[in-house]
Structures are given as C-alpha cells and as structure tokens.
Amino acid sequence: MSKVRHFLDVDRLDTQTLRHILDRAVAIKADKAAYRSLFQDKTLALIFEKPSTRTRVSFEVGMRQFGGSVVVLKPDDMQLGRGETIGDTARVLSRYVDAVMVRTTGEERVHELAAHASIPIINGLTDQTHPCQIMADLMTFEEHRGPIAGRSVAWLGDCNNVAVSWAHAAVRFDFELRLACPAQYGPSQALLDWAKAEGTGRLVVTDSPEDAVRGTECVITDAWASMHNTDIEERAAILEPYQVNEALMGLAHQDALFMHCLPAHRGEEVTDGVIDGRHSVVWDEAENRLHAQKAILAWCIGESL
Image 1 (cartoon, rainbow, N blue to C red):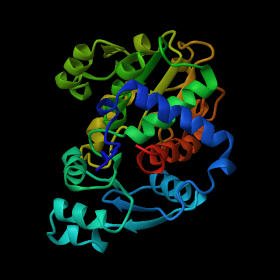
Image 2: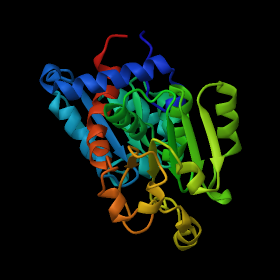
Image 3: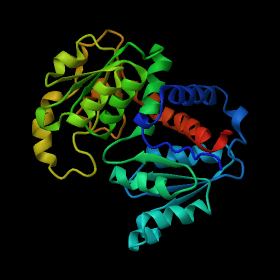
C-alpha cells in the first residue's frame, strides 16, 4: 500500500518537499490550462468547524477548476458534532472521498484524523498553525523579490497560529524571522527550542516593533484577536504599539513588502495607508492561496507516489 501524503504542518515536511510544492504552485499559476483535468473524478471534503472566506473559496474553486468536485461539511451537517469519534469519521470519509481539508480548533484534531484516515488530510487552519497560508505567503514573497533564503522578515503582534507557521518556514527555508511581540503574547519556549534544535533559519525575538522592522524586507501582521480569543479589549490595549503604520513601514527597507493574511481590521493592527499603499501585496497574497493550495492538492492526490 502506498504511503498517504498528509499536509499537516510546515515543520512536518522537509525543505525539498516544500520547495517542490512551491515550484508547482508557480507553474500552475503560469499555465492553468495545462492542469485542467488534474483532479478529474477526484472529490475533496471540506470540513469547517471555524468560519472561512479565503480558505473555503480557494479550495473549492481550485478543485473545480481542475475537474474535481467538493463536499462542504459544517458541524451541524455531521455526526462528528453529535458524538461520533474523529477516528470513525476519518474511516468513513476515506471510503467516499479522495482527500479531506479540515479547518478546526486544536491541532490534535487534525492529527487524529490523519492517524485514522487512508486518504490525505490537509490542515486548513487550527488554533496553533496555518500552513496553507504560509505556503501562499512564501510564494508571494518570492514572486516579488526572488528566493527567500537569507532574507529578513518581521512579524508584529501576537505570536499566533500564522506566526508559528512563519517560524516553521524560517527554519525550513533558511531566513531570518524577527518576532516583535509583547512578552505575554510571545512565542512559546517549545517553538524556540525546536527552531534551535533544527539548526537552520533564525528566530529573533524582541518586544520592539522598531527594532524588528528596521531594514527588513517584509513586514507582516495579523488581527490582534483570533477567532478563539475572548480577551479582545485587553489584547487591543497591549498590542496597540505594534500597529503597522506609515511611520513604522518607513523604517523597513525601501522596497519592503507588507503582508496580512486577512481579514484586516483597518485602523487597528494596520492603517489604510499601509494596506493600500505601495508596499502592500495583500491581494496577490490572497490570490496565491488558490495556486498554493492547488499545488498542495496536486502533491497529496494528483501525483504518483
């Protein structure tokens, strides 16, 4: 039996595999017609335990553009929300569809699905990581500025799920990631220990947004509160100094890029002048979710093992 290819987290794949997926994404974007039948007679199940715009539309459109079909499942649609185990759900879906994308809460739910499935499981987002987003972000950086190896990237705000996946990417693709976070929202010691043990890339942790941004080639931020956070007002007060505004962007390299995974809360973590300004590539970044995820699907179900 062939080994199943799951796309669970950036840190669970080697650099060669991740580079192959990125290169495939670039090829797919350049010549969509060449891949029109790539997913012919294939079906992707999309499980959404969290709201979604970009993840749902990009996966659904990508699958359909290449000849496949999708089944969208929400908690109220499934027995999983009525007590059926994750393992039993995985076993049943493995008999019906060719892959499952899941957008959920805890990382352990994705890993449990993968442990019991005989088809690929794709992590569409958890409270801990967001690997599909980071593949699109890497693609966006490289199409604007070339190879990311050896470059510098600054993250401002909470070290949330997107930031963790950026940290995984910094290690796998050998670039510097400067994490500017208040102490209570900084990276976990486990993440820092993992990066040090891997021995590639570089994580720099600071509480100074100015130090992080100064001279960097890419500035990234995200909403101050994720979907699972309840302390919204407290977080906003603590994170206010980390807003990406025109003055802060002025400290970055003159050709620095600005990224945001969206949705953006304009006037909070980023100003209109930045997100709509000359540094911003957020719309290319959003589009590249489509191409990067097609490449992930191609690696999972469209290529011979």
